[in-house]
Length: 225
Length: 307
Ligand SMILES: Nc1ncnc2c1ncn2[C@@H]1O[C@H](COP(=O)(O)OP(=O)(O)OP(=O)(O)O)[C@@H](O)[C@H]1O
Ligand SMILES: [Mg+2]
Image (cartoon, rainbow over all chains, first blue to last red; front, side):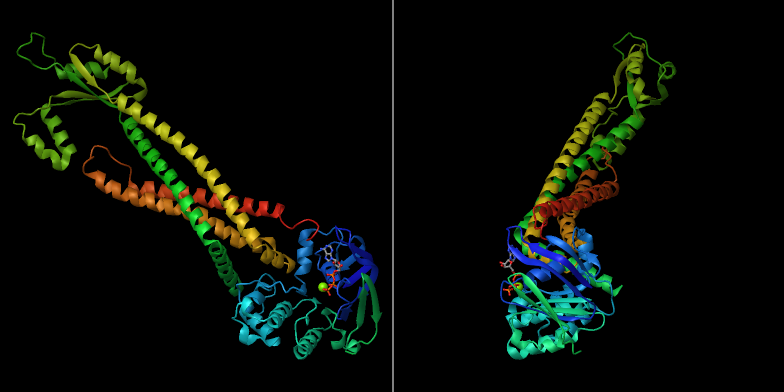
């Protein structure tokens, strides 16, 4: 699923966001990525989503090599990923439902109606009553849940959730966390970054990546499915 | 199937949102394309009409030969139209000669004038004189004319060479003008669309980036922009074709009675031609301009290191 060998990431301005690391994440795992602000969590997810190319090493995501990959291959890979962006990346002027629909419109499997699928996802994050509201009328926490609903609706093989509870109160954060955790199954791998370690139950994860100023340290264990 | 419909509606709505997101500028653009296509449409209609006249005159190059007629004050011999017509028909390049007597000449003018022919009744005596009418091959016109004028008994010849030459000149001028205007309209629309689309992309670059991050294929992202481009370009072209077509219908109706001897081309053919040509140009320019706008926005966009 995800394989990294001596992968590092240096931004064009010289910032070394990720020091050389190696790791392997299989199908159906649940991985927490923790670390202080600026430690490189978002950078790691950007690498996995093909938003930046590794500066060195070998990285493959869902069997797609990430170095020197063609734009079309990256695009294809992204269709199999359900990303939750730290900055949400929702489109203002469109309703919550339309934003979720925008994330699944071009995906092949068409089980039912688009709107139906989007409404189901919104239901799961407890926002079906806001489906018709334009994004700019929603609170930050509600926007975050729309962003998560979009990732859920994509029914992807890899969920990359960047700080998905960042703007939620403790109660809602726990609900969302357990929702994301519940997405994990044999085929679906879930990666969740957060600095809110107090909310995590490491025992439920199959691995925890601790990050500190670009250094990755992966510990295995727990995995109480 | 359901999803395809859904997506078609979605793309149309997105195109609508794009149009409204820069409403004033896009409306002005539509107005501009309509105006430039309007000029083109008028020139095209003029060109087709003169072309029609040229064709008509060419197909029946007829000349009228007026011979000397009986005159008491003259001692010159009376010319027998039958003999003269035989002589004329022997000249190479002459296809047929008929004799039109004075009564026939009057009848023709009556027909030509239609409703206005009452005016002719005011003449007690028939004011028309008999003549010979010869149909000739156009390319032999000059030789035929000089041969006929050297025949004895021929007083004057009326030919439509000068009108034909004028019309051919007009047709050529309109063709050149139409071509030049066509090129100008093409460049103008192309540049305008390029700019609109580029502005639209830059306006929406966050949304586009999000769609790319979600893996949307490029054509999915580009589709609403093509619809916008087609709307401004082909929309303007068809609007112009519609306006000129309406103008043609009105003008033809007005011109039919006072100008019965200037047969205009069938309005339906002219209008269909306008819609076909302008629609085609509009669609082509819409596609090309949009593609260019998308490409130019892309080259200056956030591609490169960050994907
Ligand atoms: N595009 C960029 N160009 C240069 N440096 C960058 C860029 N993006 C991030 N960085 C730097 O890389 C480092 C890691 O940033 P990153 O966003 O990955 O941290 P993070 O762990 O996600 O932090 P947070 O918890 O605040 O979201 C930071 O020092 C940041 O300033
Ligand atoms: Mg971050």
